[in-house]
Image (cartoon, rainbow, N blue to C red; front, top):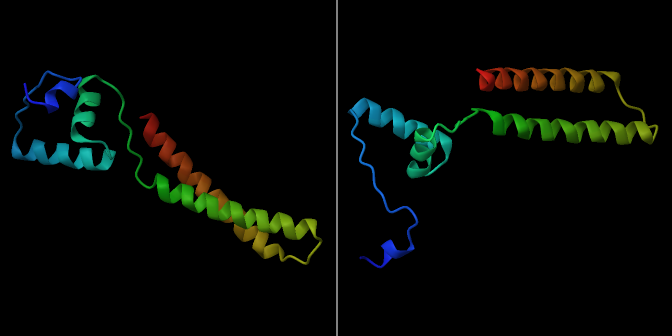
Length: 111
């Protein structure tokens, strides 16, 4: 027995044969999932849900930015500084758009 084998908890191996197209599709899904190939294939084989949400990271970053803007508005209003109504309106529109995007992503995940 090789030295590395004594540290492995998974001692069984499965060989999977695919067409070139199937192989490429699997590789694309593995890359999107950010999992190791072995983890991805085990999750698929064991019927665990693997959900990849494109654009979620960008959406969350944008929500953080807009949250900071909202915090600045609240601070200005609490200090009774002059604040333009159009800035509040722009922020409201931006947040409405972001929540719409979030709802679309959630609908895709529920399919």
